[in-house]
Image (cartoon, rainbow, N blue to C red; front, side, top):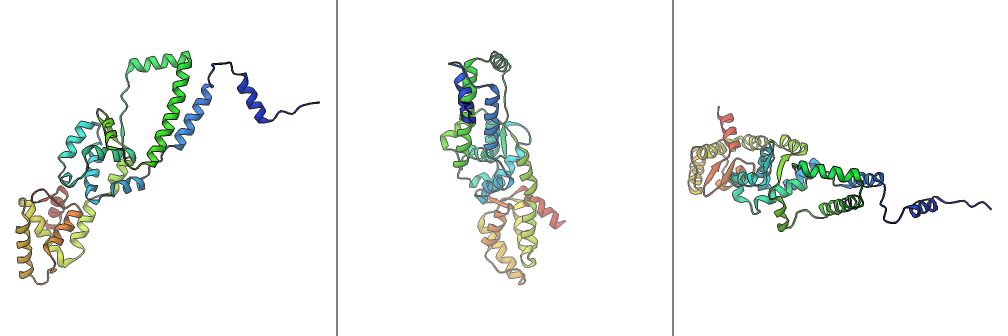
Length: 273
């Protein structure tokens, strides 16, 4: 009688033929690595934008960070830069959290620093094809799978994990550059100021005052009221509304007093030229 061996039986037989203590062929490990890469999180512009826009007042901070990483910088350099961003005054999260969010959503990436001696030793171990090397490769694949699953499941890393950022170096990704190009802060600011002619003069006056020097709230309120009394065609709305809207589109920021941003200064120059 001729016995027909199933495909499952064949695979089992092949596995049984492996000597005790042997390890899978390198092709099998490579296949697992490829499968892991395919299962990894796919970063998108939509996902990056969603993460950045969760807190509207943090949007200009994220954008400036992405622009800062157009050149390679360390975590420490980045944190010092972030601390000096005017809008960081509003932030309720530490500098490292901004880097964590951008990394987890594909806006920036770590720059690999390879040690030549270590790289050479790893190459020698790969050539030897030792049992220890194969086991390490398999463990690396499993760790990578776990990390990918956690990245999807968790929106943010726990605070203590921010310690892993220390000593890292960063560069903006292509996706990060796309976000910068797609989010010109001048456009919404210009639209706000020009979309209603009854309010344009007041917006420009407020920006002009803050361009000359930082202004206390009371002084801006006084100036807006005076303008409204003088020009009845000006929109008769609360001065705080002008300040709030200019702040939300990145024209002003509060740091003890009202200050004009770089974008606010540019749009003021453009519209009053």
